[in-house]
Image (cartoon, rainbow, N blue to C red; front, side, top):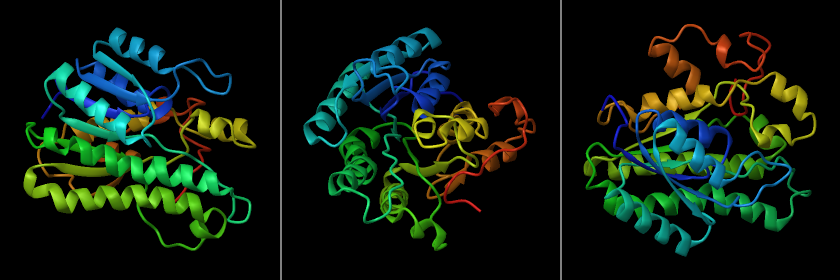
Length: 275
């Protein structure tokens, strides 16, 4: 696969940030993109809605199917899969992008916040992919891409926010499970994670977010890396947990300054779970 033209992507999230950047990169090829997202009305804390994202996808050259709903809800997932397959005559790619960030320690984390991370990050990833499998197996070179980190047992990732670490690692474990279980069906499953912080609303809304954004890269670096994953033929990247910068360097990218929020490839903060 060298292009995403005519390919159909079903994505969780995607109203903004990394998900939208991935969608826009695919739309430039003429891809069809169905988004499941909750933000249907403007929120002062968040940029954009599912409707503004759909308009941007159409403007970029793709076809959009905005589906207002919650990836925690089985009925929403079933409807999204059915609507996507009917509208675009199949599903070629699932992108598990929806994720909740909460860095609270164990005693400070409310049970409902713990459940939210587990339900969106882990269960949402698993159930959306599960529901799409009957369509993926009929696609030519189907892919599952999950935005989650390589698993490291370094104690520092468990010492301050174990619940978030568990939720993100759960996404990666799902991605690896799909890779080994579904490979014989022709489905390739890959996890992707940024080398540095990425300027998203989730980062900006944290305490000290302004400084963190200044030390971040733009979501487009993850989008370009995702594009490389999704256009790599066959099982070549199946079961791998990739870092965006490393993959792009392997594919010939040498200048990363344009990805930086400051325009300089220096002073960047490494993302969590790395180094």
